[in-house]
Length: 90
Image (cartoon, rainbow, N blue to C red):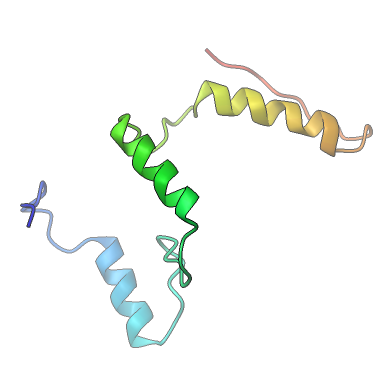
């Protein structure tokens, strides 16, 4: 078993929300708990990404490659009357 990296953190909001969901027989969407088996391709992709060091929260500004790819989608998916603009930072 691994030792805690935060031994003095105490109770977290995640612990509280999990307990509340269980107490009230609620669905906890807090951390995205899936209630179905994951596609093996996703499991392998996640393992590969973690081995490459992508194991932290996304930077606040996002990943440049993903931002650029997403910026191209509205050009195809939205009506021409849409008034969206994108600002590339960095």
